Length: 500
Image (cartoon, rainbow, N blue to C red):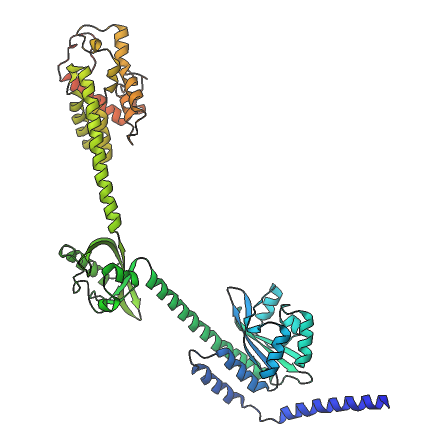
């Protein structure tokens, strides 16, 4: 009797399964071509704010009938799958299912855990998953909970397919069939999924473009420099917040007007601006060029402006970037004034040092000044840079500073110098180096003073340097020193040892 009862129960289950399958086959068959045509229109006419994932889920439910459909998106940044639409579980049933899971599946992410899973995802064809919900969740939902869910939702066969283009993944769909019911129309479902993949790709491209435009708009609006767009007549078409602050005008006051109409340019800058606009007309970028702008409140601001011809919707416009350099110019002016003061102080110090030497050796009064004039003239003739010319001028004014160490009676002696006296005079190069070496002239002043009595043939002192071993400035100074000494009166002219 027990066996007979079990046999009857088994027969009843089989009859119920067959009846359900017959009922599914008896349903009005879907006109596939007509369905795909209407679906194409639905995708095209979908409101920009509409949910394409839900539309895909609705359409699949219409094709398949009794089933649970999940439509998921793929996020490149996190390399994970996100549930975007769930069809076939509604009302109290979905609340209980979510309670079993203990999480909101729409807030969960399912990371792609390995390359095997990734390769499965990009297959792009509908296939049956051998495992259950645990494998389907990438092991994100505990196995025990998945087993409870499978019983609660009467889970039968599970099918899976992805939205792909080549090896690029856009998302996927999961079809969960009730126990005892087979999935019909698989080829048609595959066709629809490919159609949906194209629509989804287009939708995502539109969203990415929109996101990109929004990001660019944010960057444009909140850039620290003033950004503006002009037409080729110089009229403002757009501007950012920094441009409003820089010019003192609201965006609405700028649009449709030009720099000239708003009197932003000083009369001196108008010709320069016109030349730059001509370059823009030729498709050339300009800048950075310095301008002084008249702001709305009549205050002035110094700016650097760069311009770039750009194409927007097939029309050539000009992107301008203006940077406020007022503070920089003020700092430069202060630095220039400070440099001038420092130069005056330096010149006064050099002159004082030069006079000290003249007091020590009155017979050579004016010698260093005249040598400085000669070396400066030679340096200019040799096309030295301004800094180098200034350096050799300074060196020449103090090149004999070391004579402070030589007794006055030796410097003014009119008779022949003894060997000891001559060695004391020759020591003034070393003494001058020792005095100057600790001073930072940003130029090799001490070394030039040290070498100014060296000679090309090695006959000079203190180190008998030759040719290129001697600094060029020291060679020039040596020539000028000798020429000036030969052309001026000295008390020791006529003696056997005459030194400049």
